[in-house]
Image 1 (cartoon, rainbow, N blue to C red):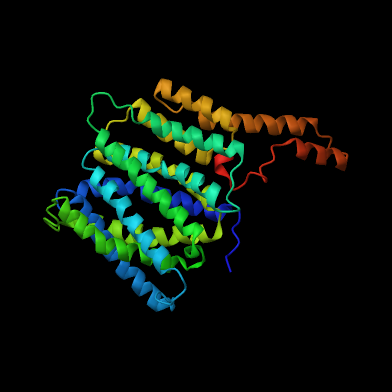
Image 2: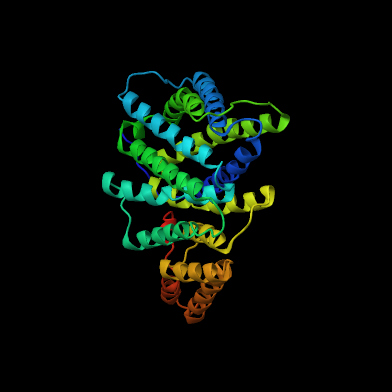
Length: 357
């Protein structure tokens, strides 16, 4: 029996904040390791290491991975999509900046929401939610503007990777994988990709492992243990308990972490269009403002090359609304206190739906 999904709560928001920070920094870890371990070869090592860890985890917890439950072929398909996603992410980083790649990858939540909207009951998005998603998509589209820089091929690879990521998420939710354990779902993807990625690395003419320096070992451990094992177990745990479309939209926080990581650790340029793109994506996940206001702030930030007061204005408006509601209340009468509370913004209805915030 499928487990009922629910709206996002504080635990889900907190965990997603941590996960998006880890995912955003991963592109930097890949880039710095490229001289020692080829890009797609890193992905192969990453999947193999994480697969061993997942297998050990399942044995210690008594989680069956090989029981016949109708998930084999969907699991293989998810693994193939997963491998293709990382071929384009890792391979594309040879042709674009880490800060740009992470922005393009997070076109996936838009595509995921679109697929789930039509294929999975209970994952429908309202018109206001779609507007917020489209604003974030516009931010990603703006990031293609990069005059004087030859990053187009790498940027396109990021978009293709996003398509494969979205397809994987929709496949998991639309098949019997949605009823499988998070450990088994992850094992399928890691095992299949660990088998396929070395062949992709070979066909791309990569050198493979050149030198296992301390930096390379630390980076591979970060990618394989922290990201591919721990963070993805947490991600699939969330997918089985909360609405996938809403989780995917919240993952738009990663572009901001990715852009900042690229600028801080790799010295990559922070263009106005790129920053505005990451800001628009992140604001749709974080802000509780109507989408029309997010759109206005986005275009203002794009024009100025900075995030133009999204958080301060949101905070001040909320405080202003609360003050007006408080002023209209008459504490001496219980009924008027109830009326005042009803005048405040109704956040309970939209809690857990960041795309509509």
